[in-house]
Image 1 (spheres, helix red, strand yellow):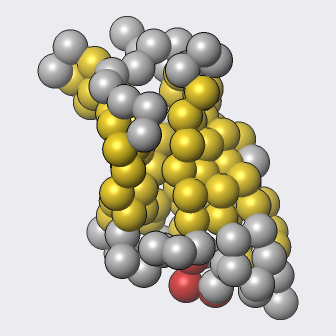
Image 2 (spheres, helix red, strand yellow):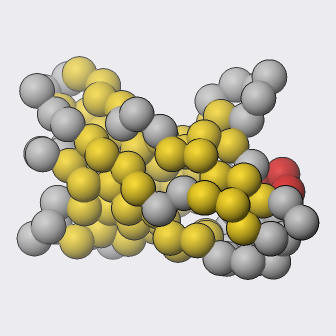
Amino acid sequence: QVQLVESGGGLVQPGGSLRLSCAASRSGASMAWHRQAPGKERELVARIIGGSITNYAESVKGRFTISRDSAKNTVYLQMNSLKPEDTAVYYCHTVWNGYDYWGQGTQVTVSS
């Protein structure tokens, strides 16, 4: 079993920043952040493999940064220059022993 606990969401104005955290009881080689906006499919935002290999959705490149503290088993998502279209529930995800594990999600709302 794997528990993933997200934190750091909230309400922020356009152009602002937030940092999401995901504390994992254990994790696989890769950890990722996904998001789901109302009425839309869940989409991959960013993934980190090991400690340094990263990839990002085109819509967040240059604005979001994913990082990982292996000692704390925690993954972070630094989100800068936030836009209203970034509004969504953000989920942490990992794969362990072939099973998918998701956090409960944290709401990010970008609005003036």
